[in-house]
Image 1: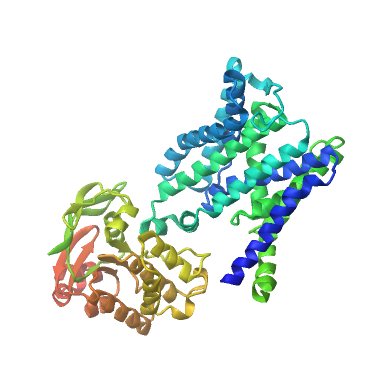
Image 2: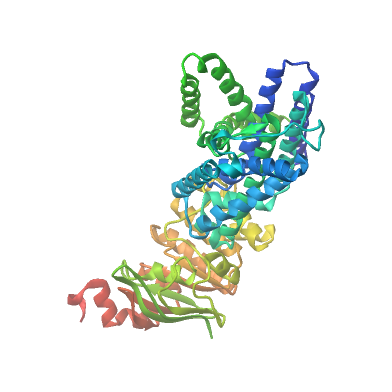
Length: 325
Length: 236
């Protein structure tokens, strides 16, 4: 057991070091931007996977919480002049509260599998239409811009990209630490994913733990949405509540491995740069063709590695590192 | 003394009465057999007791407490464990992990889990995935999981079905040992042989109605029971 623990600590420390040291290399801003996207999508997908992977509840509507987070930060910053760093937290809480509205009825009355997935999509679409329709409040389909603020950590407004990279990396690390502290709760989620009836028969309150997983998951996705608007400075309902946004979290999770909390990071490290590269090389000339290649990659993964890329690493890891160490 | 009382329990699915006004007691310390032909309502009865179905009318009283309509997890926490007729498990987890999670949920010590594994005879399969188990082993896992939550009442839903006679005998021994350790057991069964061997008392259901109750030998001579199982012409 001891050597196994050590074997885990070493790679984690390495990943952390590499993660935090990247901005030391003088990279062109666009490359730095891609690194930010990689960590941001890893973060969002990991947060999604608490519910979608660990608890096995296929949410295809996490954009609802992403968008809520983004707009909450906008409203608090612009209407009330509150500091965006604090708004990040409030945005997470708002998203988490909102998730109960959709989650409680679904889980209480046993909406499972595809029916739950459909309910989450419908909910997100309603949110999107609402934000488009309530133009006076939300800026409608034109979207909203964050104001220019004094540079600094409390305003989350920076001129260089490096600071934004550190912020999202820190958010990701916090998320991973919290996930690793969940202990027993994670085991219950595994049980619920495997079989809800059996879980209930051994005294696990299935409804409560599913709801908790959803609330934690949507909290972090809400914070992610808040980060998004602080970084991009602009958002509209089509991005905030778009099916693309929801699916991106899901696909990265499936690709990297959604049953492991490291999976989404691996998924994002591979998929996000490929997506960006395909978009800038092919997206302009043959509109949509980058999605074709993206889709093909996913089909291959789902066909040959249903547990994602992580499962390869895991088998290598247990073969050489654990036995050797 | 009755550990569990079922009073006038009814459950219908559309126009079909799966249970109609069924009343029965499960006494402290006994092994009660619940038998009946296919579709008699045996599994429905278990599902109503354990909260997986909400009965249309009637009451379930456990240790003088009305538990009708409570959710399954609460009933499990009160001390009623069940097995599933079509075996269910956390298929992608090992046998040990399956039981470890059950133990975690009820605060059972890991040493006790290991004892239960030994009791049901799954020692050699501790680290096998639940999905790789044979039918017999899966039934044993069902039993082990129910035991790990340390129930006062254990409801066994056709744990013998599909087993060869010598396998069934092995499992029967285990069930007797569990009963001796102080757990009350109700057992749903098709196979008369098993019922005769272990049950103190038998209740017979047919088309959702209780048609007989008593000692195993008595019940098996009962006209209504023979009719339900074999048809009119076999009644002497």
